Image 1 (cartoon, rainbow, N blue to C red):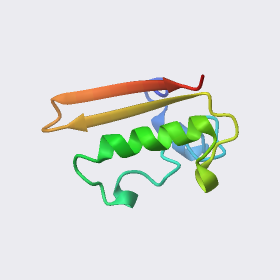
Image 2: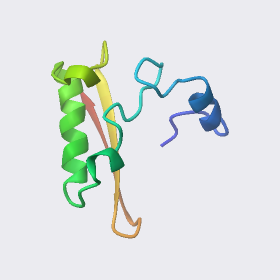
Image 3: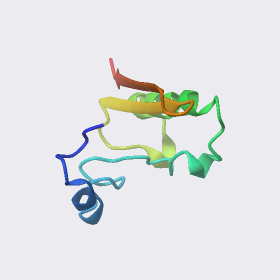
Image 4: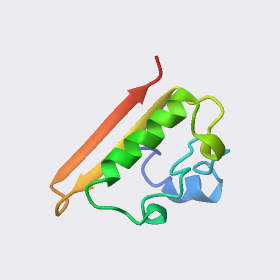
Length: 89
């Protein structure tokens, strides 16, 4: 998805960028496997959590100032790829 410069993914992990309090929080819900990865409902779940962040209703997962959220989902054998960008209005 290009969240970091090429070759900087490990640095993002090592420096904590992707943690809840980092500069680039990723999967604050624990990710798909933490939810049992329900095939078919995965994309819906990702969008619901993103919408909860943007509306300030994410409870313990809430990030301080979420204004935009990106959701990436891949289906089938990797041929169906989707990215949605949501913005609070």
